[in-house]
Length: 338
Image (cartoon, rainbow, N blue to C red; front, side, top):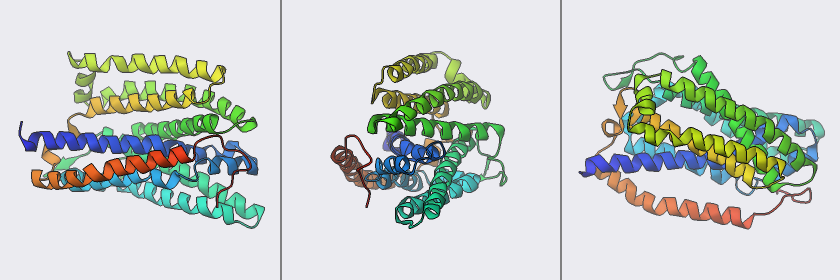
């Protein structure tokens, strides 16, 4: 195998890892904002925000890394996907900025009314960002019209019932991660309410996984073949079995008052869903017409960027792990963010 063959595969794995790392780390972060309307107590909301205050900003590093890798390694995909999904991507970025501002300013509001306004902004930014990410994912999965290497569709092609379903699914999924995070990191009444939220959102999440999984193979014959044709079925078949096994463990752990297990199960659902997505798309990066080799930059550029990533990725992993280790443990009302 030549460098031109295996380098795009390696980089596709790195980009997929960056996206998954972002979903895992920033998902529960956004989920806390999504859960704000169901937690009316100002003190409880403070605890929710304080539980992620030391780490929330660093979680978005993976989103930046994934976008930069797409730009440098798969420029054809970058120049095709962005014009097709500009509305959702711009909405996501603006929502993340809006949410970040609300995160900081809610602690500096001098009146109850001001605090409520920033809480509303935090919820709106979190929910919009999650919804936009789901719409972006759905728009990519349903396919992008390409002609002569350029986007050939319209401004609203991304908006379909399938993409709306994906958007709602991501909002529910992030809300589930947020509830499970609170089960792990808090205690008392807030933790008990979070268990109830997690139970409801877990059931909704399972329903969304089933519906999206049944709908996806109908989008393209290529997807259907990946899920049903031998021997790929051997790779696919464990996914629904593991989802069901995690569901049993998830609801059992909630009833048994486990703290960390529900979060691990929810993260397992995301990993399995992400794996199913990868199985469906491979080797496309712009379905249904451009694969990772057609979209990649010259091998020399990929090697140059790979050297930098060999330093950058372990560094990000190290300081992320260190931050979570330093700020481990339960968060209470006496914990303050400055």
